Image (tube, rainbow, N blue to C red; front, top):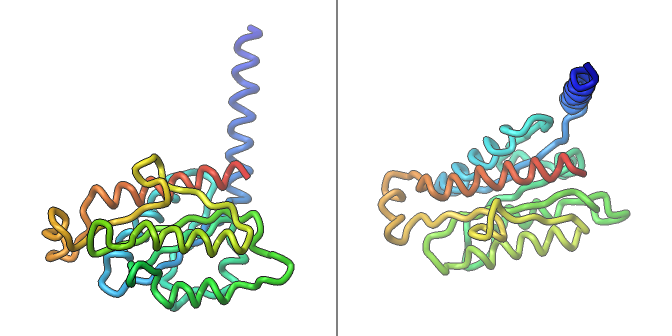
Length: 194
């Protein structure tokens, strides 16, 4: 009898917590720039991963539609960019530069990054780190991907073989989309802990 009561109490607490999470979801913003569609595909996979976690609300925006107010609204911000000469796209840097700096309103928000690159060792890790460095300047808490294979975030190779075959079809290889989904899920799970 006691065991049944304990089980009922635990279940009631779990349902109550789930109800609170749904009533007050953590907000995740995903902003990306995509010239060829590859980074957009990664962004959609990141979004799907985040949405797979109960208790979060996800807003996915191309950078041209994103405002500084969106970053202030969010509990977590995930930025995506193609690699431009081992750097982020200028539009993503401009977006980061639009965030308010005074009084540190971005402090303690979760931050993460994803990129698409033409080739292996073509600057994807440098670009991921540049985005994360910018987030650290804003006093954000940065996280990487789902495992050591995507330690700095998710990235995709879209032109160099053996992945170049998928670039001809305009599709990102499923392997990289899985990394992006894992990044979104991890960010959502960590955001719920804060």
